[in-house]
Length: 124
Image 1 (tube, rainbow, N blue to C red):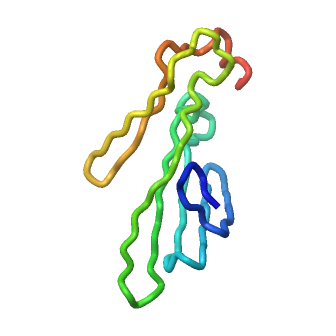
Image 2 (image 1 turned 135 degrees about the vertical axis):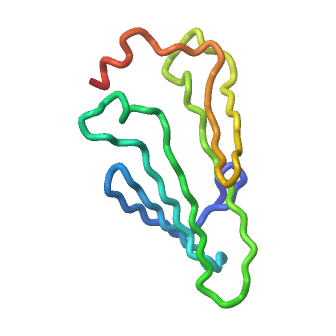
């Protein structure tokens, strides 16, 4: 089975202890133990600092065998910015990537998109 042309793992399990999540992935054709570790900032009692729109993802590949394995990590992420019935947002979403040393990331945006007035009230 494919997902936008990318292969999928045949088995996965999700484990959570908010704000941490962990997905273990397995497939008979992949000779590695694969785990995705994820979290978002949570500071109890500090709603503004806890509401930072970020998710940190860490892919962990472990070779349980004795033979070397060459591997690469690739994934897909939908840019959902502006998909909230914003009639002024008809431009295509943008995704920009950045890399610094061992760290890589991306930012999602949509030209012309602005948070609808009072939209934050529903989250309070």
